[in-house]
Amino acid sequence: MIDTGEGSLGQHLRAAREARGWTREEVATRLKLPVRLIARIEADDYQGMTQGVYLRGYLISYTRLLGLPAAHAERVADLHTETTPIVATGTVPRSRYLLDRYSVTATYLILTGLILGPTVWFAATRGGIEQSLVRTTPLDTAALQTPAASSAPDSIAALPVEVAPAPLAPPRIEAPPPVVASMAPFSTRPATAPAPSPAPAAEGGRTLVLKVSQASWVEVLDADGKRLEYGLLQAGTERSYRSERPLSVRLGNADGVELQADGAAVDLAPYRRANVAHVRVFGPDATVARIEP
Image (cartoon, rainbow, N blue to C red; front, side, top):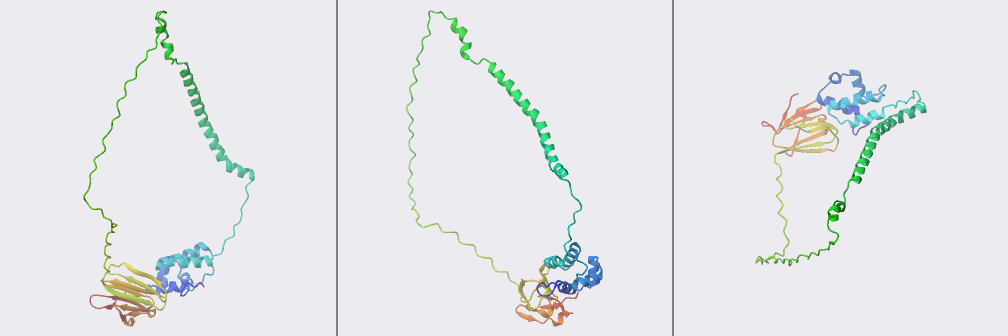
Protein backbone atom coordinates (compact mmCIF):
# COMPACT_ATOMS: atom_id res chain seq x y z
CA MET A 1 0.00 0.00 0.00
CA ILE A 2 1.42 3.39 -1.00
CA ASP A 3 0.64 6.36 1.19
CA THR A 4 0.24 9.55 -0.93
CA GLY A 5 0.01 12.33 1.63
CA GLU A 6 -3.19 11.78 3.66
CA GLY A 7 -4.34 8.24 2.73
CA SER A 8 -3.37 5.82 -0.02
CA LEU A 9 -4.05 6.19 -3.73
CA GLY A 10 -7.05 3.85 -3.51
CA GLN A 11 -8.55 5.92 -0.71
CA HIS A 12 -8.11 9.12 -2.73
CA LEU A 13 -9.79 7.53 -5.75
CA ARG A 14 -12.67 6.25 -3.67
CA ALA A 15 -13.19 9.65 -1.95
CA ALA A 16 -13.18 11.48 -5.29
CA ARG A 17 -15.63 8.96 -6.76
CA GLU A 18 -18.02 9.28 -3.82
CA ALA A 19 -17.73 13.08 -3.97
CA ARG A 20 -19.03 12.96 -7.52
CA GLY A 21 -21.82 10.60 -6.47
CA TRP A 22 -20.68 7.79 -8.81
CA THR A 23 -20.90 4.09 -8.10
CA ARG A 24 -18.24 1.55 -9.02
CA GLU A 25 -20.47 0.23 -11.78
CA GLU A 26 -20.64 3.71 -13.36
CA VAL A 27 -16.88 4.09 -13.20
CA ALA A 28 -16.38 0.61 -14.67
CA THR A 29 -18.72 1.51 -17.53
CA ARG A 30 -16.89 4.78 -18.25
CA LEU A 31 -13.44 3.10 -18.16
CA LYS A 32 -14.67 -0.11 -19.83
CA LEU A 33 -13.16 -2.23 -17.05
CA PRO A 34 -14.60 -4.97 -14.80
CA VAL A 35 -16.22 -3.82 -11.56
CA ARG A 36 -14.02 -6.18 -9.52
CA LEU A 37 -10.93 -4.48 -10.97
CA ILE A 38 -12.21 -1.06 -9.81
CA ALA A 39 -12.79 -2.51 -6.33
CA ARG A 40 -9.24 -3.95 -6.21
CA ILE A 41 -7.71 -0.62 -7.25
CA GLU A 42 -9.62 1.24 -4.51
CA ALA A 43 -8.45 -1.42 -2.03
CA ASP A 44 -4.81 -1.02 -3.20
CA ASP A 45 -4.74 -4.68 -4.23
CA TYR A 46 -2.39 -4.99 -7.22
CA GLN A 47 -1.76 -8.75 -7.14
CA GLY A 48 -1.57 -10.16 -10.65
CA MET A 49 -1.30 -6.68 -12.22
CA THR A 50 2.49 -6.39 -12.10
CA GLN A 51 2.85 -5.80 -15.82
CA GLY A 52 3.77 -2.12 -16.04
CA VAL A 53 1.83 -1.25 -19.15
CA TYR A 54 -1.49 -2.60 -17.79
CA LEU A 55 -1.24 -1.34 -14.20
CA ARG A 56 -0.04 2.12 -15.31
CA GLY A 57 -2.87 2.37 -17.81
CA TYR A 58 -5.54 1.40 -15.24
CA LEU A 59 -4.33 3.87 -12.59
CA ILE A 60 -3.77 6.82 -14.93
CA SER A 61 -7.16 6.32 -16.62
CA TYR A 62 -8.92 6.25 -13.23
CA THR A 63 -7.14 9.38 -11.91
CA ARG A 64 -7.79 11.33 -15.11
CA LEU A 65 -11.47 10.38 -15.03
CA LEU A 66 -11.75 11.89 -11.52
CA GLY A 67 -9.54 14.88 -12.31
CA LEU A 68 -6.76 13.92 -9.85
CA PRO A 69 -3.01 14.40 -10.47
CA ALA A 70 -1.41 11.50 -12.33
CA ALA A 71 1.87 11.72 -10.35
CA HIS A 72 0.52 9.48 -7.57
CA ALA A 73 -0.52 6.86 -10.10
CA GLU A 74 2.93 6.98 -11.72
CA ARG A 75 4.68 6.32 -8.40
CA VAL A 76 2.37 3.45 -7.50
CA ALA A 77 2.82 1.86 -10.93
CA ASP A 78 6.63 2.14 -10.69
CA LEU A 79 6.72 0.48 -7.25
CA HIS A 80 4.46 -2.42 -8.23
CA THR A 81 5.89 -3.13 -11.68
CA GLU A 82 8.15 -6.12 -12.22
CA THR A 83 10.98 -5.73 -14.72
CA THR A 84 10.78 -8.18 -17.61
CA PRO A 85 14.16 -9.86 -18.23
CA ILE A 86 15.78 -9.29 -21.61
CA VAL A 87 16.46 -12.54 -23.49
CA ALA A 88 18.88 -12.62 -26.40
CA THR A 89 17.35 -14.43 -29.37
CA GLY A 90 20.48 -14.80 -31.51
CA THR A 91 23.87 -13.46 -32.51
CA VAL A 92 25.11 -11.76 -35.68
CA PRO A 93 28.49 -12.77 -37.22
CA ARG A 94 31.17 -10.12 -37.12
CA SER A 95 31.56 -10.14 -40.89
CA ARG A 96 27.83 -9.53 -41.33
CA TYR A 97 27.93 -6.79 -38.69
CA LEU A 98 30.82 -4.99 -40.42
CA LEU A 99 29.12 -5.33 -43.81
CA ASP A 100 25.83 -3.89 -42.55
CA ARG A 101 27.59 -1.04 -40.78
CA TYR A 102 29.97 0.16 -43.51
CA SER A 103 28.20 -0.87 -46.73
CA VAL A 104 26.01 2.22 -46.84
CA THR A 105 28.95 4.56 -46.21
CA ALA A 106 31.03 2.86 -48.90
CA THR A 107 28.16 3.14 -51.38
CA TYR A 108 27.85 6.88 -50.75
CA LEU A 109 31.61 7.38 -51.21
CA ILE A 110 31.64 5.50 -54.51
CA LEU A 111 28.68 7.44 -55.88
CA THR A 112 30.24 10.73 -54.80
CA GLY A 113 33.50 9.83 -56.58
CA LEU A 114 31.67 8.86 -59.76
CA ILE A 115 29.81 12.18 -59.82
CA LEU A 116 32.56 14.57 -58.70
CA GLY A 117 35.46 12.92 -60.59
CA PRO A 118 34.33 13.75 -64.16
CA THR A 119 33.17 17.19 -63.05
CA VAL A 120 36.58 18.09 -61.60
CA TRP A 121 38.42 16.64 -64.64
CA PHE A 122 36.25 18.62 -67.06
CA ALA A 123 36.73 21.85 -65.09
CA ALA A 124 40.51 21.36 -64.94
CA THR A 125 40.76 20.55 -68.67
CA ARG A 126 38.60 23.49 -69.73
CA GLY A 127 40.57 25.85 -67.54
CA GLY A 128 43.87 24.64 -69.13
CA ILE A 129 42.58 25.29 -72.66
CA GLU A 130 41.50 28.83 -71.79
CA GLN A 131 44.89 29.54 -70.21
CA SER A 132 46.67 28.35 -73.41
CA LEU A 133 44.51 30.64 -75.54
CA VAL A 134 45.31 33.58 -73.30
CA ARG A 135 49.01 32.93 -73.55
CA THR A 136 48.97 32.86 -77.39
CA THR A 137 47.06 36.14 -77.75
CA PRO A 138 49.42 39.09 -78.71
CA LEU A 139 48.94 41.80 -76.11
CA ASP A 140 52.22 43.71 -76.62
CA THR A 141 51.27 47.23 -77.84
CA ALA A 142 54.87 47.99 -78.71
CA ALA A 143 54.81 45.21 -81.33
CA LEU A 144 51.74 46.73 -82.95
CA GLN A 145 53.47 50.14 -83.22
CA THR A 146 56.70 48.74 -84.75
CA PRO A 147 55.67 49.15 -88.45
CA ALA A 148 54.79 52.82 -87.92
CA ALA A 149 58.09 53.52 -86.24
CA SER A 150 60.08 51.77 -88.99
CA SER A 151 58.38 53.83 -91.76
CA ALA A 152 59.90 57.08 -90.41
CA PRO A 153 63.18 58.38 -92.00
CA ASP A 154 66.33 57.08 -90.37
CA SER A 155 67.73 60.62 -90.13
CA ILE A 156 64.95 61.78 -87.86
CA ALA A 157 65.52 60.77 -84.29
CA ALA A 158 62.69 60.62 -81.87
CA LEU A 159 63.21 63.33 -79.31
CA PRO A 160 61.62 63.15 -75.92
CA VAL A 161 58.98 65.80 -75.32
CA GLU A 162 58.72 67.26 -71.88
CA VAL A 163 55.25 68.22 -70.76
CA ALA A 164 55.06 70.94 -68.16
CA PRO A 165 52.83 70.02 -65.26
CA ALA A 166 49.66 72.04 -64.87
CA PRO A 167 49.76 74.61 -62.09
CA LEU A 168 48.18 73.45 -58.89
CA ALA A 169 45.05 75.26 -57.83
CA PRO A 170 45.25 76.93 -54.43
CA PRO A 171 43.59 74.97 -51.67
CA ARG A 172 40.08 75.99 -50.88
CA ILE A 173 39.61 77.23 -47.35
CA GLU A 174 36.12 76.81 -46.07
CA ALA A 175 34.83 79.28 -43.51
CA PRO A 176 33.94 77.72 -40.14
CA PRO A 177 30.24 77.54 -39.36
CA PRO A 178 28.89 80.46 -37.38
CA VAL A 179 28.61 80.07 -33.65
CA VAL A 180 25.14 80.78 -32.31
CA ALA A 181 24.92 81.65 -28.65
CA SER A 182 21.89 80.48 -26.72
CA MET A 183 20.46 82.62 -23.93
CA ALA A 184 18.67 79.66 -22.28
CA PRO A 185 20.12 78.87 -18.85
CA PHE A 186 21.77 75.48 -18.31
CA SER A 187 20.04 73.15 -15.86
CA THR A 188 22.36 71.65 -13.27
CA ARG A 189 19.75 69.39 -11.72
CA PRO A 190 19.55 65.76 -12.96
CA ALA A 191 16.54 64.77 -14.97
CA THR A 192 13.85 63.33 -12.80
CA ALA A 193 12.23 60.01 -13.64
CA PRO A 194 8.55 60.12 -14.60
CA ALA A 195 6.14 59.62 -11.77
CA PRO A 196 5.04 56.01 -11.50
CA SER A 197 1.50 55.28 -12.56
CA PRO A 198 -0.83 54.56 -9.66
CA ALA A 199 -1.39 50.89 -8.90
CA PRO A 200 -4.78 49.57 -9.95
CA ALA A 201 -7.31 49.50 -7.22
CA ALA A 202 -8.10 46.15 -5.69
CA GLU A 203 -11.19 44.43 -7.06
CA GLY A 204 -14.24 44.54 -4.85
CA GLY A 205 -16.77 41.83 -4.14
CA ARG A 206 -17.77 39.39 -1.48
CA THR A 207 -15.29 37.04 0.18
CA LEU A 208 -15.47 33.25 0.55
CA VAL A 209 -12.90 31.47 2.77
CA LEU A 210 -12.26 27.70 2.98
CA LYS A 211 -10.26 26.31 5.92
CA VAL A 212 -9.41 22.61 5.58
CA SER A 213 -8.74 20.63 8.76
CA GLN A 214 -8.98 17.19 7.11
CA ALA A 215 -8.14 16.09 3.57
CA SER A 216 -11.18 16.93 1.43
CA TRP A 217 -12.03 17.02 -2.26
CA VAL A 218 -13.11 20.59 -3.16
CA GLU A 219 -14.70 22.11 -6.26
CA VAL A 220 -15.50 25.86 -6.59
CA LEU A 221 -17.28 27.21 -9.69
CA ASP A 222 -18.15 30.80 -10.58
CA ALA A 223 -21.44 31.93 -12.13
CA ASP A 224 -20.13 31.16 -15.65
CA GLY A 225 -19.14 27.59 -14.74
CA LYS A 226 -15.39 28.36 -14.60
CA ARG A 227 -13.46 26.30 -12.07
CA LEU A 228 -11.74 28.38 -9.42
CA GLU A 229 -10.70 25.32 -7.39
CA TYR A 230 -10.73 21.63 -8.31
CA GLY A 231 -8.86 18.89 -6.54
CA LEU A 232 -7.93 17.31 -3.25
CA LEU A 233 -6.86 19.83 -0.57
CA GLN A 234 -4.68 18.59 2.29
CA ALA A 235 -5.21 19.38 5.96
CA GLY A 236 -4.03 22.86 6.95
CA THR A 237 -4.87 24.40 3.56
CA GLU A 238 -6.71 27.74 3.44
CA ARG A 239 -8.25 29.24 0.29
CA SER A 240 -9.85 32.66 -0.21
CA TYR A 241 -12.02 33.73 -3.18
CA ARG A 242 -13.47 37.15 -4.02
CA SER A 243 -16.47 37.45 -6.31
CA GLU A 244 -19.37 39.82 -6.99
CA ARG A 245 -21.51 36.94 -8.38
CA PRO A 246 -22.75 33.67 -6.88
CA LEU A 247 -20.29 30.79 -6.35
CA SER A 248 -21.05 27.05 -6.39
CA VAL A 249 -19.14 25.00 -3.78
CA ARG A 250 -18.93 21.19 -3.53
CA LEU A 251 -17.13 19.61 -0.55
CA GLY A 252 -16.31 15.89 -0.54
CA ASN A 253 -15.54 15.73 3.20
CA ALA A 254 -17.77 18.39 4.75
CA ASP A 255 -16.68 17.48 8.30
CA GLY A 256 -13.11 18.55 7.53
CA VAL A 257 -13.87 21.97 5.97
CA GLU A 258 -14.87 25.26 7.59
CA LEU A 259 -16.75 27.63 5.27
CA GLN A 260 -16.90 31.39 5.87
CA ALA A 261 -18.98 33.83 3.80
CA ASP A 262 -18.08 37.51 4.29
CA GLY A 263 -16.36 36.61 7.58
CA ALA A 264 -19.33 34.70 9.02
CA ALA A 265 -19.06 30.92 9.59
CA VAL A 266 -21.55 28.81 7.60
CA ASP A 267 -23.16 25.73 9.18
CA LEU A 268 -22.97 23.01 6.53
CA ALA A 269 -25.18 20.49 8.38
CA PRO A 270 -28.44 21.50 6.58
CA TYR A 271 -26.72 21.22 3.19
CA ARG A 272 -24.99 17.85 3.59
CA ARG A 273 -25.82 14.50 2.08
CA ALA A 274 -23.61 11.51 3.02
CA ASN A 275 -20.82 13.88 4.19
CA VAL A 276 -20.96 15.71 0.83
CA ALA A 277 -22.10 19.36 0.83
CA HIS A 278 -23.17 21.18 -2.31
CA VAL A 279 -24.17 24.82 -1.75
CA ARG A 280 -24.44 28.16 -3.55
CA VAL A 281 -23.13 31.25 -1.75
CA PHE A 282 -23.82 34.92 -2.45
CA GLY A 283 -27.04 34.13 -4.30
CA PRO A 284 -29.76 36.72 -4.91
CA ASP A 285 -32.24 35.13 -2.44
CA ALA A 286 -29.92 34.00 0.38
CA THR A 287 -26.25 34.05 1.27
CA VAL A 288 -26.13 30.22 1.36
CA ALA A 289 -28.55 27.87 -0.45
CA ARG A 290 -28.61 24.16 -1.23
CA ILE A 291 -27.90 22.96 -4.76
CA GLU A 292 -29.72 19.78 -5.58
CA PRO A 293 -27.71 17.28 -7.71
